[in-house]
Image (cartoon, rainbow, N blue to C red; front, side, top):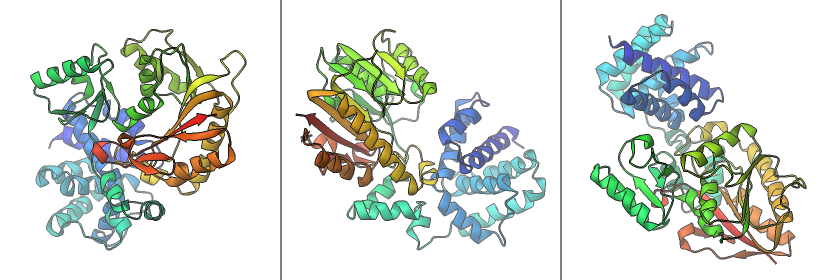
Length: 433
C-alpha cells in the first residue's frame, strides 16, 4: 500500500472539512502542503482539494445518489474523503485502482476503518455508473442559487460564460517590473528553458505561463525580476496612470502588487494603507523581494473609512481604491468564494465600499483622479455603486477607459472571468472637478 498516497488523501480530506467549516482554501492548503516536500505530492494535494471545492455541489449530488442513506453529521471526514475520491476518479481522471486503494487506506489512517468498505463500494459504483447529471444548473455547474440569480439579472447574455469560466483552472500570470526590454529578456529566458508562455498585448508587463510550474522555479524569481499578478489585476495601476512627482494613496494595498506598480511611476509620495495589520508584512516582503527600498513608501495599518490622521498627507493627486468586495470575479482562483460568500454579504460590502469612496473623495485634491476597482462581477458593487456616487457628488465626473479594460458598464468598464485569460474585474476612473 502506498502510505504516501494515503497520507495525501488524509490531508485532502482534512482540508476539505476545514474549508467547508468556513476556513480559507488558501490558508488551509498552505498548512496542509507543508507536510510534503515533493512538488508532485503538493501539486496533487492541491488538485484534489481545489477540484473538490470547485465542484462541491455536483459531487454532493452524486454522493447522495450513491449512498443509500447520508453519513451521520458526526462523520465529516469520511464524507470529505468520499468527495475527494469522486474528484480523483471523475475530475482528475487518476488511475482508478491506485486512487480507490489509497482513499480506502486513508480512511483507516483517519481512524475511520469502519467506513473503508463503504468508501470502496461507493467509489467502485461511481466507476461503473459515472457521475449522474442534474437538470438543476446550480447543481450541475456547482454554483449557489443566489449567485446564479444575480448573474442572470446582471448579465443576461453572458452569465453562462461566467459560470463556465469560474469552473476552469486559472493560468499563472506574471508581471515583469521595468520596461519592454526586461519583459523580452524574461520571455527569452523562458524560451531557453522551454517553458510555455505568452506575452500579453493588453498589459505591457504581463506574461502568461502555460506550463504547470511553481513561480519560484521560474527564471528571474530569485533576483526579484518577476512578480505573480493576474492580467486584470495589473490594469488598475495602468488606468490610474500616475505621473512622476504626484502624491498617491493606495487605500487597500495588501498584498502590494498594485502598490509596486504605482511605485515604478516615481511618485513624490506613496502612502500605502490596509485595515489589517497582519497583512502589512506581505507588502514589505514583496517590496523587499522586488528590490524596492525600505523607505520607498509610507506603509500604515489604519481604517481607511476614517479621515487620515494629521501626521499623514491630507490631499493626493491620485488615489487607488481597490475595494474589498465579493470576489465573484476570481472564483476560478478561489472557488471557496462560492460557498463562503452569502447574498446578505453584498449589502454590508456596499456600505464599506461607499464609506471608503467617501473618504477617498475627501482626501483627493481638486483636479485629482480616483480609480475605483473590484474583483467582482456584480453590478451592485460596481456600475450601480459608482452611478449612485456620481449622482450625489456634483464635483465628480467619469473619465473614459478604453477597451483594454473590458466592456462598458455604466461609466466604467467590466472584464469578465476568462476574457483574455484574465480574472473578472471592474474599473471606474473618476475626476474631481
